[in-house]
Each structure stands twice: as C-alpha cells, then as structure tokens.
Image 1 (tube, rainbow, N blue to C red):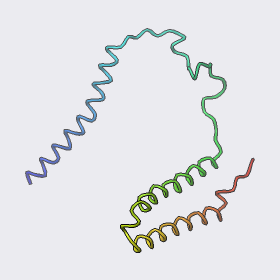
Image 2 (cartoon, one colour):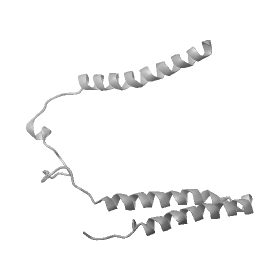
Image 3 (cartoon, rainbow, N blue to C red):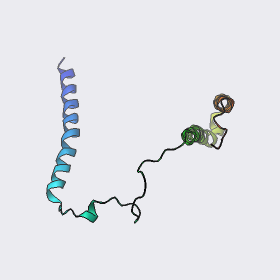
Image 4 (cartoon, one colour):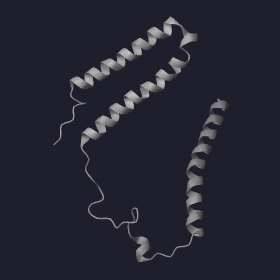
Length: 123
C-alpha cells in the first residue's frame, strides 16, 4: 500500500513541476525584458509587407484529403525500408508478411480511388 502512495507522490511532483517551471520561466522573462511598446512595434508584420485582406484564408477540403493520403502512403515507405535492408536475414515468412502489408495498402488505395478521393475537380 505504501508503494502505491509513493508512486502517486512522484506523479504529483512531476505534474507540479510541469506547471510550475513554465509559469516561473515566463514570469521571470516578463519581469526582466524591456517593455517599450510603440505603434510600429504593435502592427502585424509578415515578411516585410503590411498585411492586406483577412487573416484567415479558406482552403478547399481536397487539399487536406490529398495531404492525408500522402501521409498514409509515405509512412508505408518508413515500414518498407527496414524490411528491405534486413530481407536476407529474415527469410520467406517476412516476405509473405510484407505482401500482406502491401495488399492492405492496395485495398486502401482502391477504396480511396473508388470513393473519388484522388480525383481532382476544379471548382
């Protein structure tokens, strides 16, 4: 029973430090830095140009779908590379496992293609 209480104390200490250290660091930084606001300092600055228009731009949802598909199939290469490097040592079982993995990715690609996720329609 005493061991569990000790574990909770350790967790409580980490939570307290996780909250206390950033608060102390930001407070000390605020007290030590110079604060001389002027109108030019308080304007929005982006690459040397004064901002024009709204700050938020609406993007087409298709960009996000393409980005998500890229991430999914890009992660595939992360899993294929170690397999390719160690193929000679691992043998036939891992070859079959990799075909199963590639088949699952192919099914996902075919599903996305059938749902017309990969088709780009200009609007």
